[in-house]
Amino acid sequence: MLGLMQEWPLLCHKILDAAATQHGKREIVTRSIEGPIVRTTYTDARTRALKVAQRLERDGFLLGDRIATLAWNSARHLEAWYGIMGIGAIYHTLNPRLFPEQLAWIMNHAQDRAIFVDLTFVPLLEKIAGQVKSLTRIIILTDREHMPATGLANTVCYEDWLAEADGDFRWRQFDEQTAAGMCYTSGTTGDPKGVLYSHRSNVLHAMIAAMPDAMGISSRDVILPVVPMFHANAWGLGQSAPMIGAKLVMPGARMDGASIYELLDTEKVTFSAAVPTVWLMLLQYLEEAGKKLPFLNKVVIGGSACPSMITQKFQDNYDVEVVHAWGMTEMSPLGTLCTMKPETDDLRGEERLAVQKTQGFAPFGVEMKVTDDDDNAHPWDGKTFGRLKVRGPAVARAYYGDAGTEQFGEEGWFDTGDVAFIDPNGYMQITDRAKDVIKSGGEWISTIDLENLAVGHPDVAEAAVIGVSHPKWDERPLLVVVPKAGKEPSKSEILGFMDGKVAKWWMPDDIAFVTEIPHTATGKIQKTALREQFRGYRLPTV
Ligand code: AMP
Image (cartoon, rainbow, N blue to C red; front, side, top):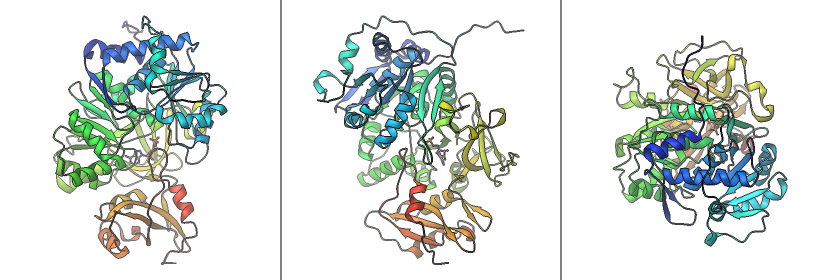
């Protein structure tokens, strides 16, 4: 017997409808690419998104068309997302930090038909547009006054193009399983792979993300997503913020410490989310400028492991709660968040920090397990690590065009490529990417643990650990360090600092000092490039 409740498809534009109905006056504040701070509201965003939808249809775009965006976080980018989804087309976020050839490859693979582009990225698009034959419309996200001179064909000025629509439009209706958005993984090895979100998965993910023990956000929050909309959907904030009616503050192109601080302060931001590097820049700025954070309550930190030093500084010096989170593009992207359960909430000091070093537990809607190579599940004992697998309504079941099929296992389990353990309370800790883990004498050494420890040294700006071949042990850890400006820590000082905090046999065999560590387009340490750089490196223990 079926239930007798209404069919109310979970469609993304309903999120914006709800925001405009219940929270219409709530602001979306943007540091615009043109310069000034621009203020709109959810009511404006909905009206303008309807115009985007109307205008796209008039240009001949339809259900299922891929429409790219190459843009920073801004109100215009958000309107474009909802306008695209509102006709059943698919927003495709492009990461401008990729090489032009990679971008052209991705756009061709996705067969993008149109693109919304920020002024910043017009020169980049000029380099690749000619190679993307499917592209028939380029919409430059600015007004007439700021339109650049460009040789790009089929170009329009966003504000002029939008002004040709009156907004008298109804969102198109379709099945909730219809594709809504698309994002390619950065592909450190092999070609990038496309993840195709549905309306249903986006809506469910937004609800999951907002829950009290996940991000725990409400209409009383002022949310600053520093994490870009092109990096795994700004971790869902482009959907969960309007869903719960929070004021949004969009940082545009400037993510340095001073610029982020200015927005946190003037807009009284209560909640923010970014990768560890962004927070390092902010903390450094706060220390140098002697500033405090009176309004900020909570920061979500993810994308790479959050060093305990960052958590400690936020909590002890600024009274800001840190929520360490893990996820991936394939998971929309949230997987786990480290909030406290009754079992952990009474812990203080080092014990609490030890919990916060884990990536947290999975909210309702994410199932996980850790297995050996034969898919046998490991116990949740806080030490046995293995392959981390996940499933849920906002987890990919395939890549676009059927790439990477080996990652999708039986009964919906997706192999994340991460290595982790889970403790008896359900808290999961990533020890490595499977490709990066160091195999020494048949045992595994976690590079993340060693990096986390090394950046705790006061003279270390950034640290990365890679395995270097060793005749006896197979591989041994090499610690690569970027010292802080003006500091010259010695190898023995750093090793002395680490000594006793990890198992003896985990200690790096050597330290190499460098001025820079290579990063991927999403800000992660590029271990493949680092291993290449240190190929043939002779450890003193050999
Ligand atoms: P992306 O799809 O670009 O967001 O990358 C996802 C990958 O980033 C994951 O599979 C992890 O390897 C890594 N990652 C994300 N969050 C964390 C975290 N909190 N700690 C360690 N690794 C993380």
